[in-house]
Image (cartoon, rainbow, N blue to C red; front, side):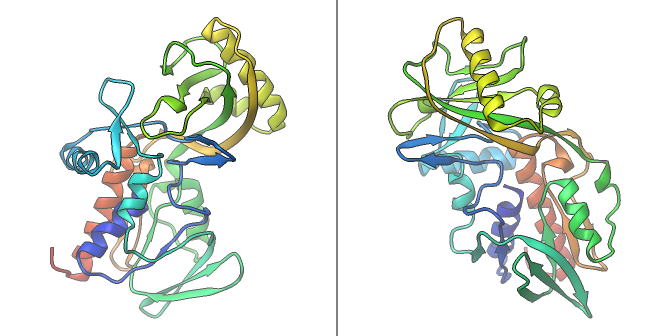
Length: 300
């Protein structure tokens, strides 16, 4: 969301740009996995209308059918999946998917990028990095650059289990107080989803941290059993798989919209700047784009 928001604002200002994403598709932690006829939002589960700018963005998305309300209490989800808002922001913008940027270097007044296959990309006038903070620090280190305070931002990991069940639980969204589970969402209850009953189970941060290196089969077994116990009813599980998010949720944020060095024309943004929310990632990406535009002297 941070990168897509920054890209959309720069494109609207008439700036030529290119987006690089290591995933097969865009979305980052606003992720959706498909397997045969099944579909799971196995990352971020919903958005809220936090702040005037993001609320207006949500209203526009809802009007155009890109998001819809879900589970009450001011929650929205992407339609037909959680990647939809990010894909909408990137319409008409060149995106190199499946491209992992492993190095950066500055040559005179331009930036060049190196990807995992050794290919060179550039030159670019300015560079915006919207990785999780630890990955941003590592990428900056390839050029011997430090942006202040980024290393202070920390993340909690999360094990996510996606499981098909024979019947739906009573609640579409559950956040247990006890046990290893932090959240259970009936993914199939979200608007625009394919038929069937599918649960996404997120483990709590401390539990995920302790069990981070355990085999996926063990994680699936433990969390599906815990889900059945939490729901208080036997659930017959069929297909299930686990996904490990090493940088899932921000624990320590910077408390500022973004980091930008006008001398280098280099900046970084993400939820690690303003807090563990999709809306915070949006606002951070927008702030970084505005900083770049101000530095370039581009029209508003």
